[in-house]
Image (tube, rainbow, N blue to C red; front, side, top):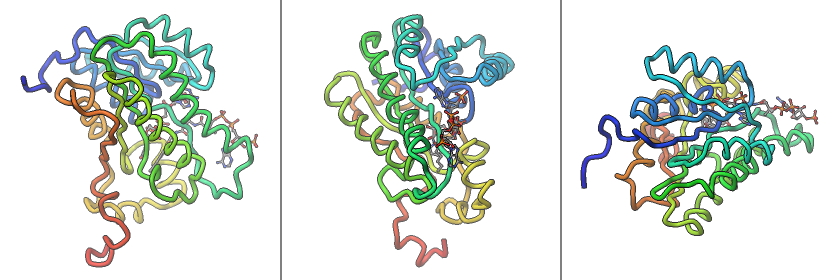
Length: 260
Ligand code: HXC
Ligand code: NAP
């Protein structure tokens, strides 16, 4: 087998990144552009889409196609994917989340997060399905609290757990289309960390909880996505690649001897 992460790896390939206008999704879009993919970004706010397009053009990576779409709106998602045409890689990174105990979440607050994260991912998968080319793969961005208790983010945890299960179900139902998840740890400079680390003053505690004692970089998530979407991962499906500086590996006893 040829080594895979080489220049031009995704030339001629069509890559769709939901939530690709900011944060981790933007880093993923940037990475696929570096390997010459045709990148389509789907998210809601035109100002985010315009800034992302400018950012990528400013980095010398050329044009991306942007689509102002709310992933909760199945008809709008279907229209956008029809306009996009054939797809080689779909990355579902769009998400909504805000910290708050379950008792403080109204039915609409709960439903909003579940609708964006779980139903939105399903909407995009369903719409893209007929357009998937031979060799295509899907990556769903989840979070470590998809398989642990998620105090303060029960809505997001439940939704990500659903996405993790959808990942496995579609890997089975849609084989040989590959469907995998990537689970980032706490990632520097993102909206998610602004809400959880900065607004709540939890940054020092979060850094201490990571065995590598630092937050991750968005590009460290993008690198994992490149590999999972590449032919080098051709027999990898239905799994979740955890990219979290060792946070998940640590478990309940991890702090006892390391002082974490
Ligand atoms: C309690 C809240 C709330 C808050 C909103 N709501 N913010 N409840 N605490 N902080 C409630 C509202 O009162 C309303 O319920 C319901 O949620 C819907 O709110 P809207 O503002 O109408 O929703 P909408 O405009 O659709 O916006 C969606 C959103 C918003 C999720 C609320 O924050 C957003 O657009 N987020 C996108 C960006 C984002 O969240 N990025 C972070 C991803 S990080 P009522 O009952 O009043 O009608 C991530 C994981 C990080 O996913 C993991 C780190 C380890
Ligand atoms: P972010 O920048 O807020 O990314 C979320 C993206 O989704 C934005 O581009 C947003 O753009 C888009 N979006 C939100 N609601 C949408 C909707 N209804 N329809 C379409 N697009 C929508 O946050 P991030 O922290 O980088 O998160 C990216 C992904 O990584 C998410 O899946 C998140 O759960 C996951 N994650 C993040 C961390 C972390 O440390 N940050 C850790 C674990 C997992 P618009 O607002 O313009 O629509």
